[in-house]
Image (cartoon, rainbow, N blue to C red; front, side, top):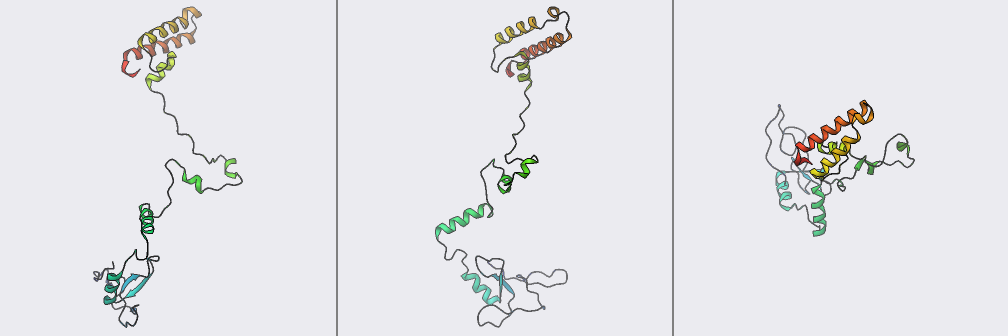
Length: 192
């Protein structure tokens, strides 16, 4: 629908809605056999909405009464246009697909030679939780019981005790890690 009211004057220029200047060069009405001034713009057709014809007030009102955007379209064409308008007439791809890879054509693999790949890199893995890292220190799988925890701790404590290795500092540090993991896992039963 084309508006027909004049706009307010802005910065000393007087405009009429539609773009014609009052007192400026006038356009002739595009309606056949009309000699009036064309002050109001109307689209030429459905396919060229940004190309305008200029009409007088009487004929722009007639144009608005008769304008039917979907005239001549069947229901399938109207539905296709409606669906296309949902995405603003832009192409869409399935989620997770890297659209830059679709637009990039590299038949000679020049970009690949310089480190660019066509596939999206794997997202970085999450760091393990405290419970997971302590369980890994003791060599336990998730879902272990308290009795499995105690059994595993006793065997690792005997295996890495510094007295068995002649006071080896490395074994002593390993035993400290095992003790810390065992103590934490016992204190936090809900996170095992």
